[in-house]
Image (tube, rainbow, N blue to C red; front, side, top):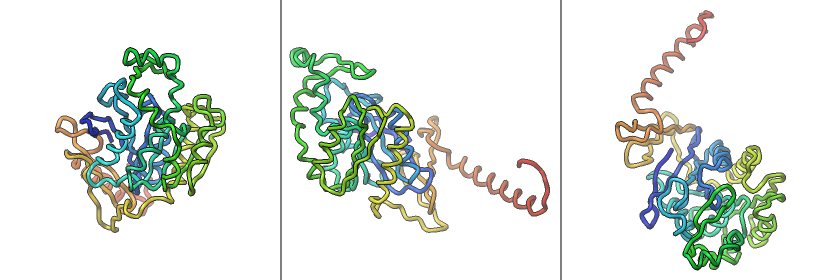
Length: 328
């Protein structure tokens, strides 16, 4: 499901919500790495692992990244934090508030900072994250003077070239302490690879040491910083999913009695969630009718119901008669 959520500066942030195929039990916000964007393969694979246990995952592009509005050169780390809080606080009506935050790389530092502003968050997971946001300053050490003098400069980070503004450099000086980690009062899982060449595993040690219990550490063994091997991303997602289930708040569970369905508005147009006791599906209208085409229309669903019921009835009858009629 794709939608837009405006941040406090009225800039539209591109959001994707990965919905569970079974019942919706709760939701999580995923914060991507410095310049990656929400659609990085590792992010999608981790999200898929969470949806399998009933946790919807909200992935979004920070301001100036991917399909979100704004100029990246005009952003800073404080803006990343506020973007995350704005997304979490402006989800579609009826959607459960996030109980879990997951952050990859600098996104990990962002979720550690944003959690203080999100009282419904019960658990936080960091993946290959620095202990403080100022850790990324070394990426700009060679051109810091140019950025300060000219206001911005192009920097190549990984496979991407981005413009870094002077505002980011000065803002990072405000994030040099791990003190806030000790004041989280949330369950924390720290995941890191000992062979990470971008963010040293010592940063994970600093996070873990600063945090108070309950806290857990999971080694990602041979994983690189970007979790570029699908097996590493899947493993990380599965571990987070298994750990996070114990922190699902009762208020996030949409109780639906047997024999009834629950319809929830996921936007102010036509996108709807439809839940039974154990399953959740989505309906929408085509773009030609003003919808987003994220799911079958109510008419399609009605035809599906009639068609599947007819097929089931025929199969039940021919099985009773022991007729071999092939596929219905």
